[in-house]
Length: 193
Length: 193
DNA sequence: AAAATAAAATACCGATCGGTACGTTATGAT
DNA sequence: ATCATAACGTACCGATCGGTATTTTATTTT
Image 1 (cartoon, rainbow over the protein chains, first blue to last red):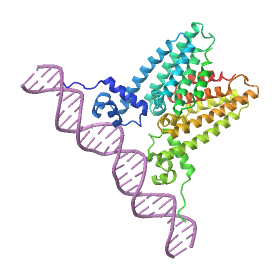
Image 2 (image 1 turned 45 degrees about the vertical axis):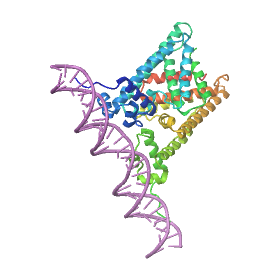
Image 3 (image 1 turned 60 degrees about the vertical axis):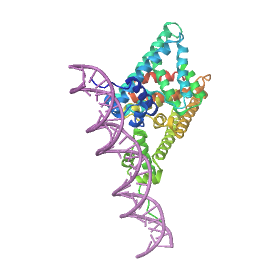
Image 4 (image 1 turned 120 degrees about the vertical axis):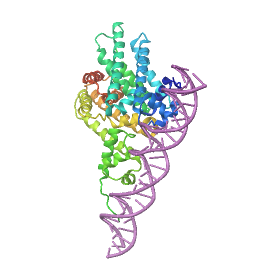
């Protein structure tokens, strides 16, 4: 009964996500967004609400996609220790490959918005807790297969590995030497025995 | 030969540091700064230069103060393992105590500015490397005293602990449960044997 | 006391911010 | 074919942004 939408909602949200991921919330202007999303300002507001709501939609899109990506990658390898090694190395490689260190959109948001906005405090926490459970389940798989010692605390180690992953992702933004991060990963992996 | 300065340069810089630490670079306006520093806008520009230069001065003040604070705290305890345990627990307690999670000014800057500004990439990296050396020297002290096994790799473990400290500091912004961070710290400390 | 000078205070600059009112255009329902 | 409706495009809103020109005030040197 009216004009049809000319843009793909998923595509423009993906574009907004990429931009917020690169620049953060404050440093991204509505003009930046219209350019990158390829739609006009009123289209953004009628489709997603204001800037904060658009940001939230972008972050939700990111965390859902990221969680399933992490789950898949850790399930790929029969060896749990090798799965984690591959996973951490991939994170590092991606950061060293790209000229711009975007890191993790959720971690960036945890730093920029979580302290001043309860909604994002909760959203980012829940994502990390979700990843922590994936880590834990992976470690428990290693225990059941006999690869890992049954005396280790799967939950605690999973939580420590999440903390280390966050630390790695963040310190990559300062471009430390390769040996620094390689050393860190090797030490972290000794927790899986 | 002219009018005398009415404000204490150190004090107003300290005030600027606190504000940038709380809100970050982009979210802090010149109006915020004049209010908090208690001086007028032209005084800021004549004393510190523009907003970025003021921010840099504030960050340098922070990193210098923080480095010596960390060094002191780790030297305080004869037991290296207890020193680290105290140190990590203090970081956690401070974050849980305060209503606003400021985290670490240097880490915040690593996330917000380092990817887009080489000056801050270098500045934040060098601070982390400096802390890493303090950690390493502390671990080596533990080896020499016989508290720690001489077969461990002091440098690699120090680097892994720095990564974990960053991860802990960042995830605290999402206010995880106490058990989450306590578990993480306990696991990390098992690296010191 | 007067001149020189730098700090302080006020007021202002153009640019950009997030957000919206409004006129135009295209499409589905009748 | 017409009408209702919603998306699109333009143009604009007041507020605030970082930064500065200019005037006033206080202090030291002469």
